[in-house]
Image 1 (cartoon, one colour):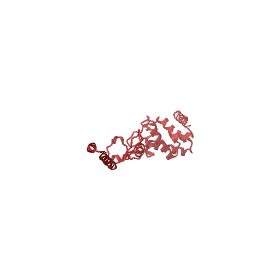
Image 2 (cartoon, helix red, strand yellow):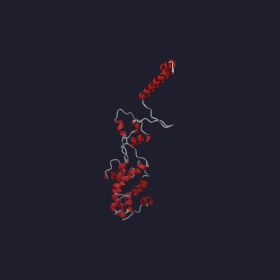
Image 3 (cartoon, one colour):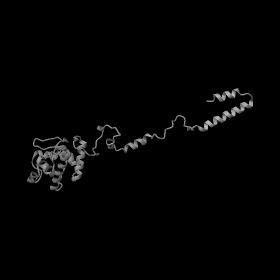
Image 4 (cartoon, helix red, strand yellow):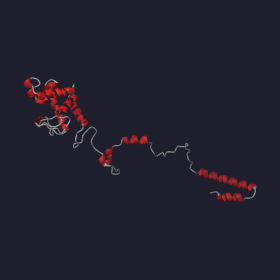
Length: 224
């Protein structure tokens, strides 16, 4: 950059001329420095982070607020749709098979709160009736988690007894009606759920059926 300036300085004769050339060179360099964009100093060992790059924690927080459902309607965004489900939290898609104990307990919790029945009692009854198997069927035709008979299910408004949600809703509703009928007496309500209220009324208590007596005893053991 300074080759011509330096050569003129070297070829100049006399001290006065050399000093003039040195002053000229100094002024030229100072003018160049004034035109350059100053570079910010950085601490040794650290790199300057461009202002347009967000810290990772900020990116993480903003992504937590993202409505991922919008990705499917945004043509500019490419996303694997198989990773997306429009099922609301806590709800079950219509065609999704309910099979886990946790899912069943969720259905029981909602139905029990709705009808004012002890959730623990309902779970103990389901354990006895079907062992938490939503596909259970008895030899006499009882179906689902709470083993609803076809006529009973129809009277409760259950259109599909094999649907876990409908089955639990209908079963809890029926259990509540038995509790109301016998003034909250859990033993008589359970006996009526198994043998029918007619049998309980006939014997004015738990019928002398071995199956019903064992049924009541087993549920109470898991409930109390």
